[in-house]
Image (tube, rainbow over all chains, first blue to last red; front, side):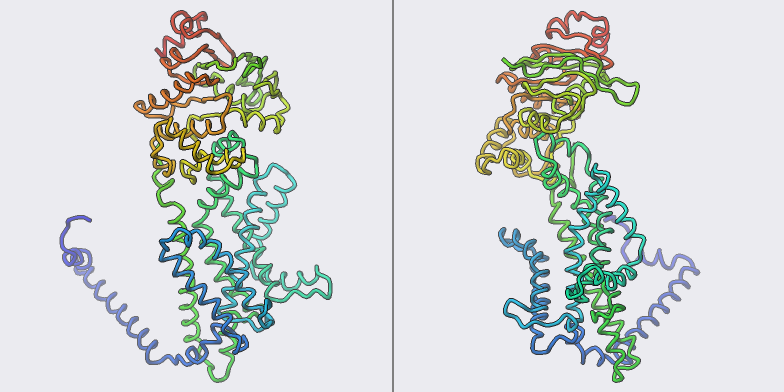
Length: 342
Length: 246
């Protein structure tokens, strides 16, 4: 902080220095005021929020059978609770150590809760929907894409020409094709490769196609992290007698993923937002359920309300993910490389 | 008794013309301290890096602790050697994502399959010998260069090696930090460790070395006792080098 003139004086100097500056300031303030009042007026007077308030369960769970809704509700509640717990940073060591495992466990937990089995009534996947489906699609495809992306990135670095080439080609092809094309191919092609009687449900097909696509981008981010590791780190590991596998697992990957973390966060947020493309494939996730609501004659023409509401929900979830990612970054480098003095 | 290192006619080429090692032969007895000196680019680092397979050979015969290591660069032989030979680098090369203690116990636990408790006790023991036991919980980025290099020595010693290789261990350090690292190496030598040290530290060489090997342009110019080398070098090239650095 500088010891300058008071904030008021500084404002005056920056905004009202010349008559022209003064005029601009007044005009801009007027414009801002106008925008603010119209927005607020629309939000609180013109808009009819019934389309949102009457359908909250639909946005959350889609057409999930009402008496089974506690299952998706429980999953989302667990996710929110876990997010808060992580962000608050538990003091007890064992809770903190268990957190990553609990997060990973949330993926199978969500699948079981939604699909049923293990004593729960089975619910077919076409009944899944809303925010629950959006989150499930993100979690499952992310959980598949990350290990696949890491393997692709490592494959691209290997000395075995065949593996290296095929990984490169895969990554380049996937990055050259638009996501929506991959999703359509997934819906049409995956059934072709499987025997007739084995029907893979639409959600799983979407997740597979989505994961295969995202893995190519994740691979490139991880490659960036791998390249940031100096050769001397591998030498140090080799000299200690670590096997090539141990070297990757204990020395190279932990550092590479840490470096790639900001880019990977970006991918995770993109992953969540791209799930909205699945509405085009007929999945009733958050965007899909909104579109079907807009087709309901009771709510005809309520586009703005629905899309403003959707924007709000996506913003909330993305913010939560960004906060979690920042927390993770902070956790992984509290005192370390940041202050590397040599 | 098997010699620690026995090399005849080592040749290593970088590209077509440059010979980093040109017919190098040498012999290191168990318990001996060999200091390798020479101007930069003379092949000292390349030479010491061939001893544990970090550089492959183009020609020549090399035996480390009786294990042959020839131009075919057999990975299995190299790993056998690496389990018995420790190395310390110019840039320390600690693992920045692991604590000091984990840096030292990583290989004993993962490579030698020792119980964690035992490995940690030995690590603390080694850190105490190095005078930095209180740093065990910190991360490499929080330590000074001299402390990091002592951790690197402890990390290499944790595997109980029979030979220690030092590749310019003090060249990246602030002048006032050099002494603490040299002291650690000196006590190691006094305890009978077989050591090959690439260094520019003349006082260290004079005091600790059993023999000094002087290299230039990939060739061994002379190998002498430190007294002979520093007072009355045989070769004209060695005298010119010593005039410049002393």
